[in-house]
Length: 293
Length: 278
Image (cartoon, rainbow over all chains, first blue to last red; front, side):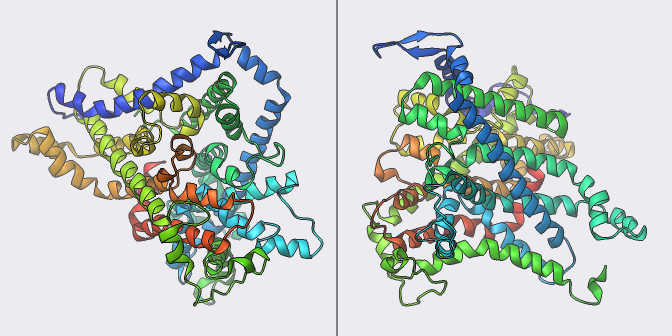
């Protein structure tokens, strides 16, 4: 949708839009283009230059069991984080939407963790679950559970899932609560008159009405779990033990920054970019045309 | 509902549990920051703070710990970075959204779409190539390098576009009749009516900027440019002889500013977040 009335002239608007276009060009299109180019090249045998290798980097990646393993891990990690963070948030939002005393206070106390950095949630969870220093971690070890996420891959994975999901609950809570509050009173009343109670009412009426919110949050949570959790995982486990918590973003970082394998790392970046573009496209396909209207 | 006759115990129980799960880790860090590091290393952390043990705070603020920069300096870097990102992004987004909505100029659609495409592509997916571009510009290990590349994204532009499209035509016509030029109109009408959105976006972007980790890790290896989040992760990475109470005091100090911004501006923030991104 466009405005009917506008101002005249073209020089001023061009000047106004220029800063953002320049920044986008320098820090988005240029790097993205360079990623695509590097993904098609490799260092020559002497390390003195680059040679064009076509799609070799990509076929190497898809043939590499370690890459497939990391991709699979990332998918599982994303689903676990999204499921946990959204499930908890929905439960809290449903109860916070009821007419109870002190609901404003509850809301505030459930919203503030939005401000916590992903890397910060790692630090906080360290003090809960570290086998030597952590409150719960020590308790577990004293009570016969062999808890050490430095050594046990599943425990490490559990820990990064918990820390990542914990931080994201607030964000989801805010959206679920807003979604619940936008359900018209009349609809709720009608359902109640029909005798729909508690769980049944939630399942047949509330949850379907929340579907757009849920879908939007699913996309946001998956993108969060795939990318923003770099800080959480890197601070807690560095992707270890072994490669048990090495998601795709950590692998890009390790291959590119630590191991300096620019070709492979760029190919991985390109795959991730395509992944995000696909998710975004799906989102806009289903979420409406607000942007282009 | 049954709420009129007796309190809704189930709701209170669930919500209190949620509040507890969020508060516990932070409380633990707060309590631990007042305790003796050796005791924490032995696993004797207590949930009760020692009111006499606040000495960790002035110590980390002025000296840092385990070889890091002083915490006041890291807080300053984080604050500068968060403010520059928030204000910079708001400024360029208002300008570009204003141009796209209130003018017709050549390549307007192309300009809008080329910004729009960047919507969801996080820095994380273009780590290496962005680094090499930064090196070309000589921005590695500079404060500018910490924040400028992060303001190139479309979310804020899209939000302002939605807000501006909804401004009534009568206002624009009235302004033109009064002989107000486009810049006057921007300053006197458009920015004031978008105040709530600007406030909401400020909170979101401040938190976003404060919480950055991968980007500063990559472009700034100079300890003088360590943000508080980077510094904190460095501290927990120390293998031996970790000064835990200092780490915990730093964690508390790192948490305070973004939490304060969210709480103080909660009303605008919640409204802006949910209406802007849906």
